[in-house]
Image 1 (cartoon, protein in one colour):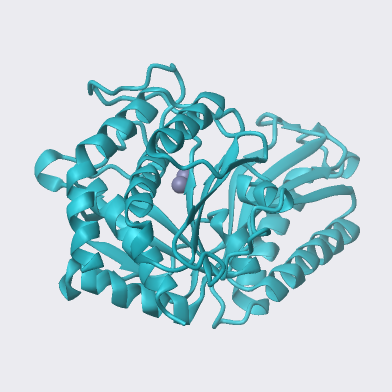
Image 2 (cartoon, helix red, strand yellow):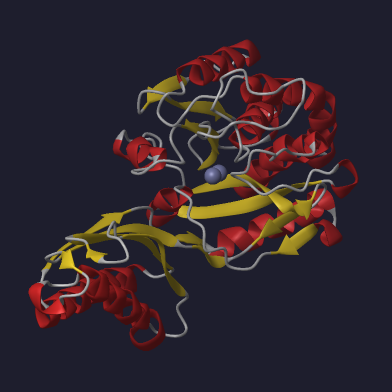
Length: 396
Ligand SMILES: [Zn+2]
Ligand SMILES: [Zn+2]
């Protein structure tokens, strides 16, 4: 039976997947600079005997594994390959050899898992019908997102996948378990850059200046009401300002104040309306209080929606693979992921691979200098991905 065959191959290839993960972890590259990682991926695919490989978006790959009747259906599996500008604090044999750059989001695990899945799928290609498209993408961590560039470079064409499945490590879920969420799952993210220009002066003489500090203060409070008074309470929205810069002194009012923040939500029409509303409110305040405004909204990733049917089928398949008790329901997660670009184009399922091991102290969150994974999880990381792809191919 195919399920047990895939499981035993995942077990057999586990050490190799771990070794590949360690190699990638030790040699991290920043977003859109994944040249050596891409070379490594290409060499591993070729080593396995996968020859239909096409370069996409400079440092990305699309590769095909054809089963019997290859035109029947196409399913895509996606991994991201980039690392973060973080100094690794872990003292491990596979510690980053590239100072200041670290795989602190588990993309090393995603790439190694997909390479493992590729090896498994290529070996069982006579046991399934259809085609599996492997997508190794650059730049998940940096706007405009490698996924958007891969799509521009036609990764979802020729052949077009019916759906796409992506996997991401989750340090809050114990190794051995995975998590899914049908429907809306992760937020859109937009960066806000505001400059309020006034006219500075001596703090003792308010009649001589236009105070940008006061204008900015009103603006922060007023904009917050977008979330409490304008947003539909059924759509999660969050507005946070993390940087306010007014370089005056106790008795010096500065000429300008800079504010930076983030807006996140889970609905595209509301996202567009919220942008409009924020500009309107900010301009209204500046108009009423004097001064000038420069308000830039840098659009990031869209919100991530998991197709409900595809995700339900994938959860069922995961339960067959891991047992019911090891497949968890996830809550909404207000971080963003560029997998969302794919899920806006075709049916998508983005699920979480548990990588926590409290006994070993592997508990740090992603994007921290002490982030690491329980590597035993990689056996599931490669095997489950392969199984999800073939079981989705087997469904009409
Ligand atoms: Zn990340
Ligand atoms: Zn990530």
